[in-house]
Image (spheres, chains in turn green, orange):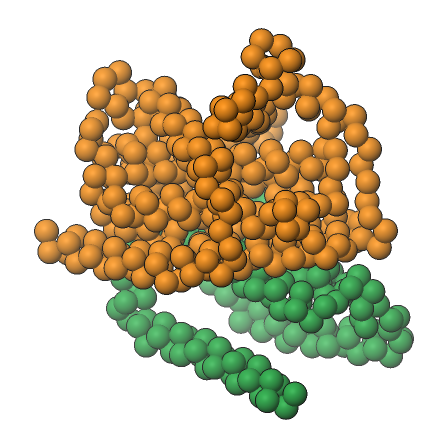
Length: 169
Length: 325
């Protein structure tokens, strides 16, 4: 059982990593989006491994089923062919900076994990939907509602930007 | 179960066996449904339908399949090669996952998944993505238009579909399909308590599976073939197989959630389940060959002005009644 769990962990990590690399290094926007979707699938797998199926399915339902599809529509609206601006080759300096940028969170996170090891269960316990619902409508109501306000602000901002462009034309 | 040093959980074995069985089920259904569709279309239009190959044209789909396998696979110039071939596979693969929580009979199911309904809704969204990728990577304006239509249609119709299923989930207090079926009585199915939710679900199911009268993503008179214009041979038939499989999946969900699953007034069992599923599929085909295609603004108006408010109302009334009664 444990070997299978490790195998699944390795598989999900590699899906996430490969997806991330594709998302950053891809030559055009749609391929980058496919990389992002791969990463989202890998993260959903991680949730399943941590015995949080509700989170995993919600991740797929909302991010893959809705958000990724909406990003797709946005990409189609801006008309990118398979040979967009991103296909021009990158200079060595750009790649160096990108790697340095990648190193920063890795170094910080690993140092935090090494100095303050996180306490975790060796076998995950599943949280039922009932407990989750009670938590969201009980002690975590404020945080839950604040997140939706953030989304509302983001949406209003998007509408504002779209309107401004139409007026300037 | 032990294989050498590794202990394989029994669920994994069940899933393996189930996937094998599902491939047989889907393949067989693909053949049967293609024949049935052509026959239904023929009789609706007062002609016999396929008649030459085999008795009553029964071997016609086999001949079609052989032709499709023999066809050259063709990729348009300037198309994105990887995504172009990935799209039909991505469209077809989730079907196996969608069938896993389905209770075909009292003992006949792959896995008793606690969040079965949620699993189906989560993985059903992958099909839209596949259609998008197919439309975009073909580098063809008809394909792209078809993909754009598919996105706005599927995203819109997903919401009332979710809400109508949610009202049943409120009533039953579970997302487990096996339990939902078990809690229904032999005759008093959920459709009796939730007729509006069933109608909304069915309309949304027709739209989500891109079937006529809502088949705008592949409207042949306007977009040649929509998102699969550029696909030939087996790639095209993968899309067709996926479409028929999704019809089977939505009919299975409708049967399990609204029509009492394998329950029946006598001899309950999987034959009831399959009978109801095929009856619903026949309704799908009947609709396709009876109604003309709606216009795109009509399509979106039906959803946002009628189905969405109605399903919200239904959900609120259900929630109120569940709390009060």
